[in-house]
Length: 169
Image (spheres, one colour):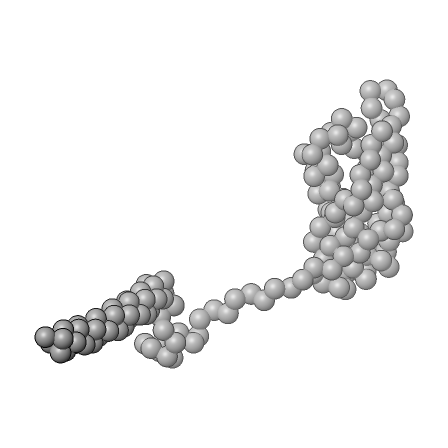
């Protein structure tokens, strides 16, 4: 009888091993199919499958061009009128551009640009300069002024005027 128990236990272990292997294969197959299906539905398709020559002529994405900056070392300082009193405004600025030639031109024409920026800052309203909207409006007016100076000189325009430090008192 002992021999009968051993012979029945061996085939049962072999059957369980086959079942485990088949389950592992089925799970791996399901994972692979889900990944392939996801790629196909998202429009990427699979590399080398179903691609035609017409797909190669798609519009190329724009390349990323990093910005360059020029930090004005001296602050723009001027007085601002506020309800009959004189107040001071000080701004440390940086110029941003994707064209290095624009920054070189700004360095070259910096005396004229500084003069115009002092005028723009001095003509601002003190109460507006204390709000975020007023400061962003000032930055836009300064950008317009800098680009007008550069345009008059036949130079490329800059992208933005940035405040590194801004104080009104």
